[in-house]
Length: 308
Image (cartoon, rainbow, N blue to C red):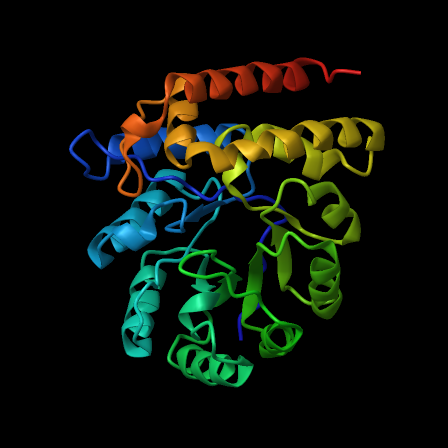
């Protein structure tokens, strides 16, 4: 069984840079990794939904994970998902190939292990088979990916993860503090950590024992999330003010993601196009761009001196 542990902190769900003709832009990816690391993130979550993994071939998913590991160069760890197939045998092959890239952990997509109408019995039977086919020292995680449907990790599955000793990471998308409290309680005393993907509930979840943040807004201002995670106990007044901004700012993810995140990153000076395989970049209107710019201006104020 793995004795590894995922570091507390902020784990951005990485976007994938594309060239204008739709191919992965590895030069831009190198710059993006440097940008995240420069903002003191704990690690990188590659090949996830933000990475447009359902629109990447298996070869591209493997190449993307390997490129992130190379670019990070040991400065921060990289974890990755990328098993998107329906058939379990195909998923086993995908997980093994992602694991071979050198990532610290492979994160399993909860909705791939059972259909929406299937119960935990089916889920755990398939999970047993998947885990048994993987190397004993491979650290695993769960990702409650919203696409093609959101399957939350139940208390029963959470206990399985803790008791197996194989799991170290949960990207929680429940947006429900009671649900998070229950999961955190089940995992107490183990290496299985919960990372909240929801900005609005982040501060309270940290107070309840969440290990950090892993969500799309870390593509806009990750350093502010690092600030909140690291200082919420030592400076609660600042944390409350910062939480107010982060929660409100997070509504922009409903605007035109991930194109708007790529636009925001281009404003940071990264060689990033707004090309996407999931959305037409032309759908990002001038008004939307202004909203992104104005959010960045307000974020800068919190970075320099938190508003009273």
